[in-house]
Image 1 (tube, rainbow, N blue to C red):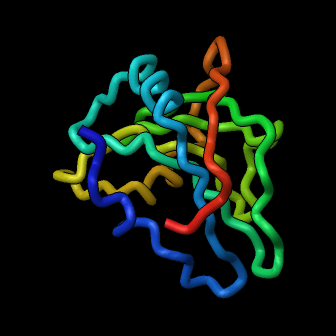
Image 2: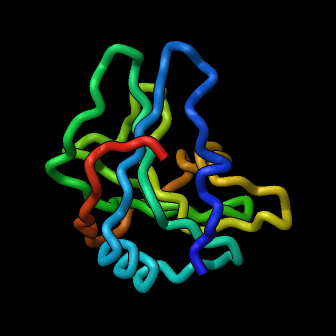
Length: 136
């Protein structure tokens, strides 16, 4: 079952220079990804991509979103996503979707950021559909 309380881990940044918006996966995209990457841990998310931008900038309307990589490390698994050809967020992290994690071992969705650099590319990128940017 997809984790019911996603919002508790995704508050707006305390850093006054950045703010966050979220692109929620369509139900169909979520189903496709969970079939292609069956969750390895009990706490399943596979819900959204976080965009972080400098205050005063607008979150972009995304024309193309593709899953291009996968990582499973430290009881967390995530997918790397290209948004309009870019995988790098303004805050230095990578665009990604947290698939699943093990909360019993103290993992939280935000911890995905610590494993992203170890991703490997997947052979066939997967197109996904996203909502317009929104607050959670």
